[in-house]
Length: 241
Ligand code: FES
Image (cartoon, rainbow, N blue to C red; front, side, top):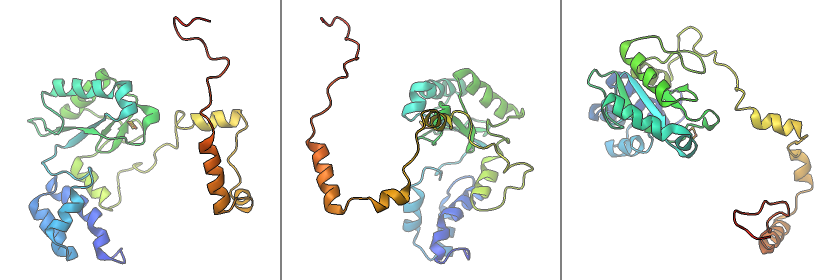
């Protein structure tokens, strides 16, 4: 709490710390945060319910999150979630009877270039398939070693929450992940091949139009008719020439 000019700013890491101790945000944990930060339990709850990383039900040792946002969904995320639900005999949000795996669906994890992705306690497992996802949860439940795609292996949900609360991850090599991978850099590579560069920010400032000019340009663009199809567009099926 002393790290922040306003102690209430420590609420987010404190909530992670509650998850590290209790496995989820218990009423006792919410009261604890409120007492420490001179907030009301309602204020703490309002924050806790806004962010999806905070869990309000007991969580297994491994939180297995399947991204079902647009790109992952079309690349197989929906199928993976369905297969895992059947394989584990539960629905998203539930935990296996052995307490090992909680299945959850996630919104976009900014890893669309490796879709479909699964996160195990927030470690990435890229380019998954229903078969690899099944193997992954089986290994997690049996205690077989599991390696995240970008290095390291997931620690327990409680240990992960402790790291998110601001404690240093002391596992050897835990912070030595690879730099951006091939798929992430694909756009940059194409831009380089085509000789594309970003405009010089200083130059655009010095030649920037004033607010009135900008408004007029915007208006002029809006008044343009929508561009017609390109001349080399192939005819649609059944179209007559
Ligand atoms: S849609 Fe899944 S990571 Fe973006």
